[in-house]
Amino acid sequence: MAKKPTKRKTTKKKTARKPVATLKPLANQRSERGTPRDPEWLLELRKREEPLELAIDEYGKIVAASYDFNGNHDFNITIHHPDGDIEFGWDALRRRKKHGAESKAFRKLPYSKKKAWILRRLRRLGDDIGLDDDPPWTGGVKGMEIWLDESDDCDYEDCSSGGWMNEYLVGHPIHDALTPIERKLLGIRQGDAGGPASGGCMVTTVTCTLDDLNAIIRHKKLPFVVVEDKRFTKPSHSVLVKK
Image (cartoon, rainbow, N blue to C red; front, side, top):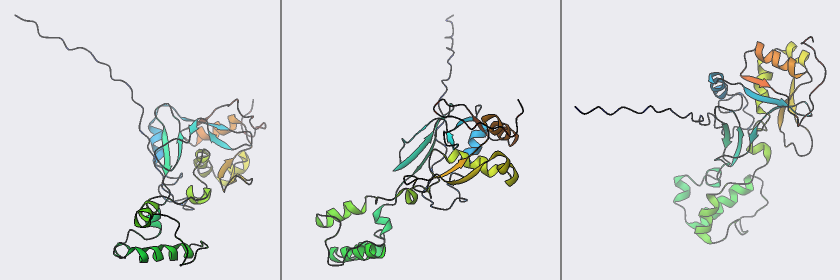
């Protein structure tokens, strides 16, 4: 009697989790879903075995310990985690939508009136352009269609959810979890990063030690741990932890 073939044991490879958060451009809507304060990515972090590593930079700002700006969107910030990266991405508004060129009314117009429509929209948005001026594209109808499918250049604040989309977004949940007294005790506050190149970049800063910050993170049961990063010098004085 022929022996039955034995099944070979196979071990499943661990695969990194897919990105769990994709953010849209909701400028200055800090409390809406889809912003860095959306709890979705925090809930995902709580399911993971390892906490997300943070650092404090040389200016006392809470920052992701490991991140990059790669992704599938016009603007990206990807926070690295051992169980899979968390990607935040948003796309700039395409001109077709921005100028109302998706509407049936626009599509029915001849080219000359479509051009006038767009020039009027540009004037309303503050562009110094006249109705008799050349349009910002070349090549007639084909050039206009290509131009409409592209996105406009925008400044940092317009394109980054009011300055909340950056490597410092990981500090905001810590700030939000604390009471005003706890924030004062630890020297935690939020504000513009400052400087001519900051572009309204919002950050959370601290003046306490890593031990103090980790103690309050554990107390609040937040899925983070602050690590010492040799790239930065950490704040020196302790307010909570006695040596």
